[in-house]
Figure 1 (cartoon, helix red, strand yellow):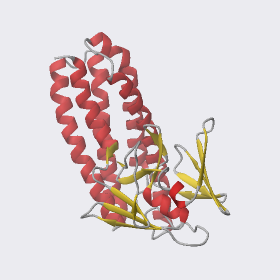
Figure 2 (cartoon, one colour):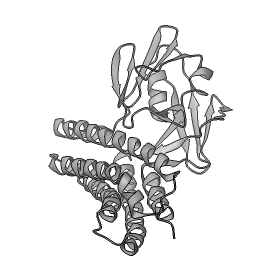
Figure 3 (tube, one colour):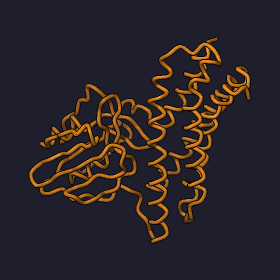
Figure 4 (spheres, one colour):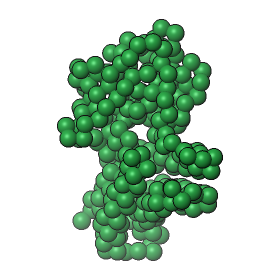
Amino acid sequence: MKLRTLFLTAAAALCLSVSTFAQGVTVSLDGNTVNFPNQQPVVVEGRTLIPLRGVFDNMGYTISWNGNTKTVTLSKGSDTIVINIGESCYYLNGNRNAIDVPAQIINGSTMLPLRAIADATGANVTWDNNTKVAAIVTGTGSAQPSSSTVPAASASELDFLTKYQSILSEYSQNTQKFMQIYSDFSSSDIDSVEDVKKVANDFRDVYNASVDAKNKFEALNCPPAYKELNNATIAYIDSLANIAKLVPDLADGNITLEDYNKKVDSYGRDMMTKQKTLFDALEKIEG
């Protein structure tokens, strides 16, 4: 069997763990279904991201893009929303507002968490889990953002959440970069260990970033209310690191192709289990 087939198994598991398509999700704006012809909504770290175009333009915003700074500016009346790709925040009339998943570009479309769109525009969002419909209802007047983060009950919890989200955002950006590198790699023919060696350093970078993120989460002063979340995050990232390490191990001769084949399936299943545990922990906190 070609090595490419085995690598694609790992790639599928990794991509599913970081960003999966929100199959069957429908977004409505003031009762009208929003069509997204270029890119469908996706789920990233348990959050639904939707393309800016199709929502903001239908809400009357003017959208401009600066390719040099990778900045989106949205204007309507006296309100200006500035979004920098990769940052875990947006700016409403110059005021910084945190978001739990950074704005990002997927298949050429700028994506933003659904909740952040509501917060930035002052709209209300409801979610029907049975029909998988996210309904956006616009309001009147100037936008007044609400918090799009998990509420903190004390200063120690706020400190933890701030640091937690910062680490997660940094790690998420690294993973997104890796996914692009992997996408390019997976489209080429990989037929020998020599071919594997050419891309091993890319996987080493992901492994090292995963270990670094894991160490940072372990070093956090975690309040009791967030122990389950932090532990689930650490376990999830550790499972990602295990998969990333398989490629350089194979390139260095530390494991055989047979070992790789066995481990990539086992690690992939483990990672998906850890992902579910993490999402369950997030849901408990958000109530």
